[in-house]
Length: 248
Image: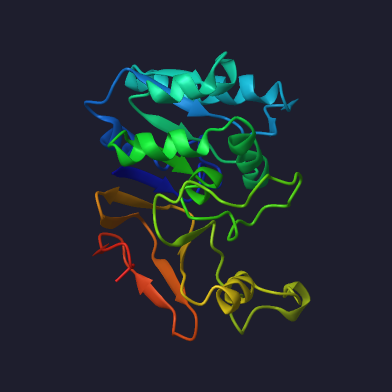
């Protein structure tokens, strides 16, 4: 398999997909001219809301990929989305609301076709929700459940969970007036681990991505990644670190 699993599309005050453009360019070199895009996470894009948001989302992504001379073909425009996936040479899943993305993947019967193609070697790019769905389930998303998917099961391309946009707990010396009094991201992931004790969670901070080549993973980007396991001390991975599917 060849996967590029990106935490976030946009850093503060940067263009859309700006920080990860060099990574994407490196990943897609020598690839087919046409990329099949899944826009289902884009519920509200460019002032347009579902289902018109799919057109806006596709146009936004196409504008970025024009510089690579790549054509974006969205599954939402296909009469037969499964047939489009079956002939795809590269698959890309954008970010947005993970619950809506997973609901639409199941409704359109795309989970197994996408998984099969990627397992056969078709390159896969995902960011945010698109990275989340590469996992066994959507259970470590940060998103509001705006719809009820048929199932929480996702593509199961990697045997661990990803938490995109991972945010560290506030430092102890932060002003109490702005300290969040509820659960931190790590507390919520710990809750997941308490009832899924054999799973590991990769907390992808902003500006990071997992480059997967077969079963070898490299952390790319500018920040560390945190690995969380039940009953274990969190482990930090540095940019450039390589590890296996067990995150070790």
